[in-house]
Image (cartoon, rainbow, N blue to C red; front, side, top):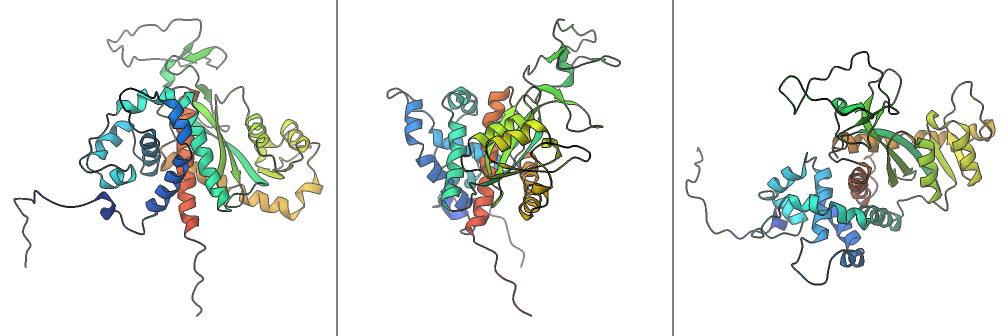
Length: 366
């Protein structure tokens, strides 16, 4: 029998957002961890706002919205606010009733400076790592480091000489002028982006296209591949080794660190040795570095560290595809760093939700 569509929908319906989320959905575990992390930040939230005046949007709601944007690959904050009107899972995750009005998308931009000033994103990321450490999922001794490039929001058309004002357009299109830089030599020393002056022209390897970008440096623990630190740099002036040593400095119990051939040079190896950290660095052919020889590279721990360090690339892939962080939507290092903490926390939370299920069941005997 063919079914029929009701022409008059029901006007009264008793339903809660919690009832539409499956009981075994991993988002429930993620929400539990986020709620616990945010509950530990209450004092910091109190210091961010005045004691009197009109109540603001709860900061916990804004931070959870940032994580949702990364988890569900929402391409912009404006689109997220639009979807919040009809997405029941989003409302459940943000603890919003069905009749509660949705906040305006300008709330995100108005609170950017406040979040940066009080280092909220960094503390939130740290609380997520702390929760994982309390579960025994984080190693305090063995780590891996690596870096990647995050494209900036600036176009190559905006990369103009520093000492010359940008010329006007002759094609009656001032918003998107025709720019011909064929045959010109352009470098970070002589040119600068008018859209994002902190972005730098950089390429990851020979033969690749140079783009305006930032550097993303990550420190991963080796037990379950969780990120314990993330840093954004201008990609020029701050090398991957400098950023790695700065992140390792915060790990007081670190004993070893795995890295690729890009870290096979004296400053990084000797910097690790000075901190009594064994550098499990992939060696470049024909390059001899004091502090890294066969006494290190022939050990079983070195082989294992070189195998595990590749997991850090898996997280980069998740952040750039699912997390939408291949190209930053924000200008400047500060705002991009803010986004990196939320995307990195979301990446960790997905992994933690899987770990919370326990080890996989053994295959049934044949």
